Length: 248
Image (cartoon, rainbow, N blue to C red; front, side):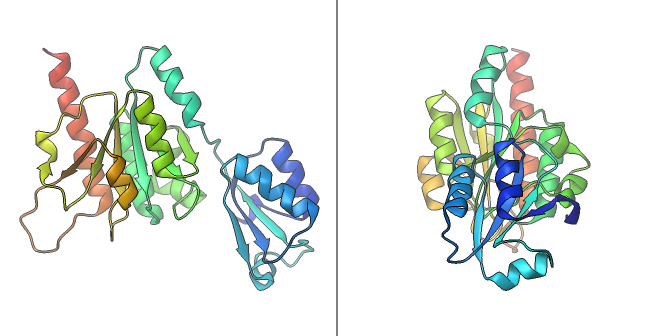
């Protein structure tokens, strides 16, 4: 990650203005200069997370003069969801999108991305906060899939769901507490599939906004599948139903 690190007010502002892709920005708590507020405002416009941290954290990241701001660039270019969806429809495609709500484990992220790419998904959507991001480790774990499948970073998953539903895309969320089984649900395209954090699943607001909520039947006593395994099962149910639909 060190090669992607930049620091200092002016270098970071210049990188923002040049349209560089950022993973995240760390800013010293209580820093309230005109330049720092400008960085925060531009970052917010572009859904770049700004983390307010103690100065000690910045000093651990670099021994250089950071002026209270350190940032990490990302190796990929994030895609704008609001631009991607119309492009897919205009190209004659029925959108197939995977939303990750609160997933923080980079290995799960990479595994889901790999399966999503193999299953023909058009994009992966992640929130700017409380989530994994596209780091070199994530790209490696995905076997390079994160360099091939578009990744959209949004202000929040509920915001993305609103946009998708307004575009005529059904939203199906996975939850072990759901009454309906995934095999009983219409999962043909256009579709957005929501996977949540392993410990709690999708957020309450996400579940309220989804068109339907489905569960994967389980016979054991553990209580839940690994989220990347669950995603694989549901992604290929979409593929299965699409194949049936295409042959009728």
